Length: 315
Image (cartoon, rainbow, N blue to C red; front, side):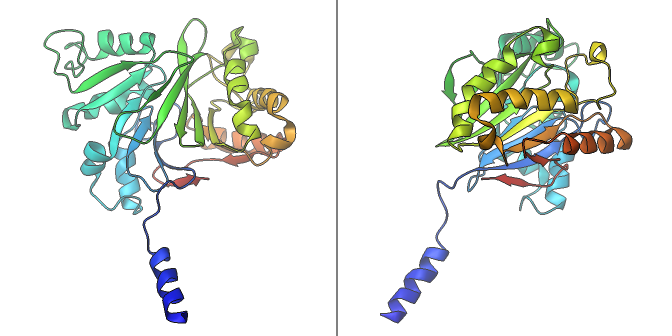
């Protein structure tokens, strides 16, 4: 009997794990503008899967190579680009969220590109137009090379993500009104991950777009199903409100998360993973923002400052 139990224990320990809770994240780029080898892009997959999506695409191959160098992937960088990334989600068409996908498109494989209509139309008309770059899309200026297929998102609709175990719901954001950005709520089983592209606070933007997102995800926070939130902080608190240009400071990030706490209960946001993204590149900026966020963290959030090429797991 002891031998049988030992055999079963060893066999169980070596079984592949399926349906594990949480997400693994590989930051390909974490900065907000001005550092062209390290711009917003995050590969995301369920734990136990190599079917990744890429949330924004400012930097791609440079970030993949950094991850390969750190033994995150057991294959060459070009294999990760071509086989591991199944789709791109573009929050808005500013180049620090898009240029990596464009530049690397000739070496890429066929993939879907998800976004709201304004974003997709800008990509189609201003980038993949045979003037800025060959038309790698399935629509637009002829000849359309059809490497990328555009998938339009609609608010209040959860749709499956092809070739992955995940689904997505998109939300429109205000990025210096009237310009749009987007948030993506990624679902895998009973687990969720929320990614914000660039956004200004509702109070400054004169909108309720972030509030809509908070109300939607509050039940997930309450039930411990939301594994993490990506939220941008571009400037330190010294930046005047009139010069935010559709971005957040540490004070504004905390004010927005106080709203979430109001909907979900302050006790339920304690230890919530918040991945701080899009810090404008400057060692002074980064240290100041880090210090200001930690000083204002009365909610007890788990603040995460991602590093390019270093894998994270959120469970």
